[in-house]
Image (cartoon, rainbow over all chains, first blue to last red; front, side, top):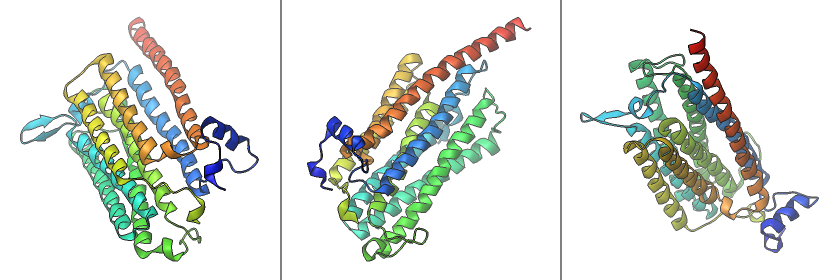
Length: 232
Length: 108
């Protein structure tokens, strides 16, 4: 299939979907399926965030002030949302290094691809560590639980642990897969045609782009959590 | 295998630019909280910065800008429909709040 001869834009849209053959032309099934999975994950996160806003808007009790709850004291000065801001910048940076890893993967630059995958995993691990610190601080020192907290409406804790916990799980799974991918790239699996342990199939640097889609999605979700949970 | 599929290979400068822009927008949204903006103004700014960041990530980092419309439409329409769900639940939560306040007073 030569992509350059296909119609583009809306004509291309009608052409692709009307054709009695595969719809996503020039796209591997793995990448298409990752997109479909991410779409379904979007629905789950949307449900969580919409229920957060519903819970918050429908309670008659005052909602805890996030910029105070998540503030940190640095040298005696309290800075609002400091840890969350650092976490945001770390996760965005990991998205940047991931995009560059995908680029070097397609250029078959194994060394730089591995380095940037490892940098991405490092940023992800740092993010999860900071989240663990935040959870510890809230649970142990401030007595926040899913059924109550000292700051205001009791629903706050349930939404907090559910949403950040579900997102943190995604980050953790991402870090594990980034390490697996880094090892594969370093060993040259995508050049030698070595078969995958679980899939028993040959793969190539396309797998790095698919990995990247998942990782950017994790960053994307954090953009929405940052806006609706921490800033709103 | 790779030769059959479109490679998403772009200049590194594109990614660095977007990385920088994401930092700028994140800084702006942090400043919304730091400067204590209130009410509709605050929410508008938060949503603008949030959607700008989401658009940059999806368009450039996830390469949707360069993908065919067949996949772009599959992704963006269901996500847009979520706004309807948001609208429904906004109305629902207002009604719940009304009944709570009403019966807390009327029931006492």
